[in-house]
Image (tube, rainbow, N blue to C red):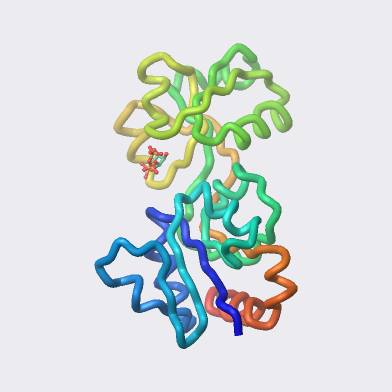
Length: 211
Ligand code: PRP
């Protein structure tokens, strides 16, 4: 039996993802040891796990370096990788939104000369260019997106809102909601065929546990 490899997105989703997998018997004691190792192995079950930057998880899965990934829908939409999205894991729920100062709400409806800062340029382009038919300017940032309208880099932002605290504390509001998000399980296309029995079993178990 060959190893099945899981790539888990580092950060806020990782802990819940591990817990959910453990409940299905997909365990890895080694992950809890204090180590600088990057790959963790469960020899008995022939499983391997690694944590990767969220935006890299779909890449590892598309190329087959991981058979299975757990990553947010935001990253899946942004990275547009060729893979199967198989289970909505139901945690990490939040929304992708357009946010900014309340005063932008009218301009945002019709104006094309708006600057939009975001960590998600593909999602922003798809929303403004294809869905809203608005030729806004999109500026890519890598974090602390809420800063952009505060310092005059952009009028609005496209970003994730979970509790809404970051927006509120910075005097910003949700102006438009783009889509709901949550953690998803993704599978490499070849692995799905080659390891169909083991992977289907995991998918079924997870789906049943979520009912
Ligand atoms: C995310 C997102 C918002 C914040 C939203 O940032 O980009 O800034 O969380 O959460 P809230 O609605 O609960 O306040 P993250 O913490 O991932 O870091 P980043 O700013 O580096 O993107």
